Length: 305
Image 1 (cartoon, rainbow, N blue to C red):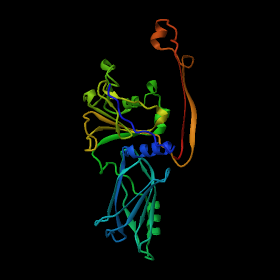
Image 2 (image 1 turned 180 degrees about the vertical axis):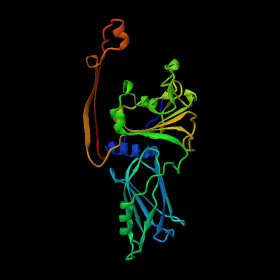
Image 3 (image 1 turned 30 degrees about the vertical axis):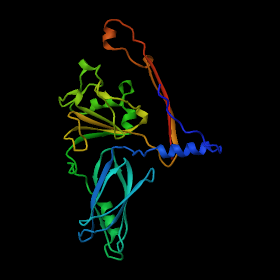
C-alpha cells in the first residue's frame, strides 16, 4: 500500500488557521447555471434618432439583482442571460430625462423586446407625455413571435400546483401540450414522451440550466417536486442553437429561488379512496372500490442569503 506523505501540524498551535487557509487555497470557483432569458431593444429620441451611450440597468424586483450595459452605435442594447422574474428597466443619459419601464416579466428562456424613447431635459412633449400616451394606448403584442422561431410553451407555478398530477410528477403536464403522446409500450424506459412522432430518446432535460438526462432510461435523472418548481418551458420544435442535442423536445425546469424576504409554507397532499367514486368497470362487475391512500407532507422556506 502506498502511503501519502502529510505535512506535520504547525508547532505554534495555530493549526485551525492553517487548515482554513489550505481549504481556501484549494477551492475553485463555480459559475451558476440557469436557463437565462433575454431582453433587447433600441433607445431613440422623440425624433427617432438612435441614442448612443445610454446606461441601461435591469433590476430584478424580488432579489435586487442588477445588470448594467450601455447602448451601441445604433442605440441597441441586449441582455443575453437574465434569471427569470419581474424586472425594472432604467434608462439614463446625460442631458435627457431618465426613464423606467416597470413590470417587465421574463419567463424561463423568454426573449423580449423593449424599445424606449428618451426626451431632452426641458424639451416640450417630454417623456411624461409619452408615458401618458402609452398608458392610454398600450402597445398590443404581436400574434407572431418575431424574436424566436422555436415553438414552446411555459407552464407557470399556479398551473403546476393546481392541476392534477399523476404521481406528483411535473413532467406529466407535457401530455396537455399539442403533439405530445405517451408510449405505454415502453413505459419502463423512462417517461416515454414522443413529440410529433419523434423518437423518445430525442429528448433533452435541463434543470436550472444543467444537464439532467438519464441516457439509460431516456428521461430525467432528478424529478423535482411540484412545490420546488417555479416554472418550466417545453420547446417542441425549431430549436435554436442554444438547445442542442434534442430532436424531439427540450424541457427546461427552473426551481424556486430565494428573495429579499423570508417566507415559506407547510402543506399536505391527500389522496383517499373514500373521496373517489368507483370505476364503471368495477360497478359493472360488482367489484368494490379499491383501497387507495396517499399522504404527502412537506414544507419549504426561502429567504435572503
